[in-house]
Structures are given as C-alpha cells and as structure tokens.
Length: 232
Image (cartoon, rainbow, N blue to C red; front, top):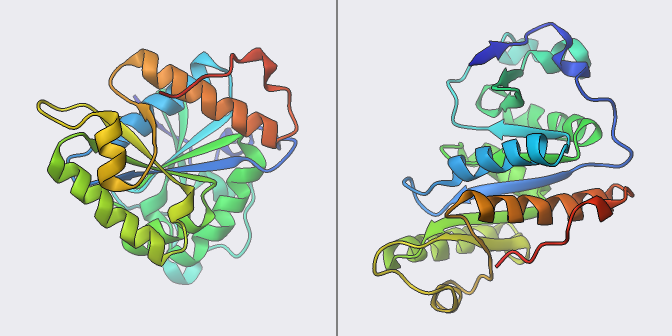
C-alpha cells in the first residue's frame, strides 16, 4: 500500500544520524535486469530485519512534484522533503524522477544526514539523474544475469562508469541464468568482481548484513550486532 506523506511528518521519521550515511547505487545491466527488485528487497531487509534507517530512491516512478522547476525550493526542510517522499509498505521512498537534476545534490546531502543507508535504484533513470547519483555513491552495484548478452551489457555499463571516473567503486550482483557463466567466468568476462549472488532471500540478507556493517562503521557506530558476512 502506498501512502502519500506530502506535508506531514515523514520528514522527521528519522532524526539525524551520527555521521553521513552511505549511498549504494543499483545499476541494471539492461532493461530486464532485476536491479529494482534487488534494491527493494535489500531496503526492506535492512529496515525490518536489521533495524537500519534506510531510504529507497526510485528513479522509475511516475514523475510528479508539487514544485515546478521555477518554484523549486532553494533549501530543504521537513515540508519540502515530504514533497518528494512517500511511504511504500513502511519504507520511505524518494521519487527521484520528480526531482530536477540540479536539486538532486541537496536531496542527497539531506538524505545522508537522516539515513544510515540510501539504496538508489537506477532502473529507468534519466542519464542526468543517474550520473549525479553515481558520482555521489559510496558503492555501485551492476545487477546482471549470468548469460553472455547480460554480461556484455555489464561491460558497456563499465565503460560509462569509467567515463565518470567511477569504475573502481563498481561490483557485480549476479543471478544465474540457464546455461549462464560461472562466477569466475563472469568476473573474467566483465573485469568486475562479483560481490554477491542475488537469487534468494538468504543471499539478500547476507548482502544486507555486509552493507550494514560497512555503513554503520562509517557512521562511527558499533556494527558488532551484525555478523560479518562474506558476500559470495
């Protein structure tokens, strides 16, 4: 169930965190990749399973904003933040497509102050939006099947990331497909390390635990309540 939170208390659902939060971008290898499903499942696991303050940034939702480009707010407060965020099944979701690219930097910084982790689903994102998120991201995950054509899509995304100077922050989230490559073969073909498989809830939970440990450590919080996870 989607509940609009325009103008109400969603902007104060989380107090400021002790340090800047982490942004993880999920980039589909091609249009049929499951980047959106992975980002959503991770967000839910982080929030409900691990108790982490998480925001899901969705750049493929129907564009809507109460602000026209000429009226876009020059500062962020609880009211203006609520104009871009809704609650979807208990998870705060930023409608990134409704944000002008020039506003995105301010929204990212506001989100960093109020959430431990921002999961940015770049499925269907405009190139200008995606580039802003990728430049700001602490980690970038390309989501792909293990078939040859999907892995070629990964190579194309890697070239784009190189042009942005962000290739070194990139890892691969892999879902096995019939007659697809092994993990080692996928790494060899793409030149990107496989950080995790994303085929079932257990693997998503393991990945979420790994991300939470890293994010909380960067916030100067004690991540010891999570078991350190090996992603693969």
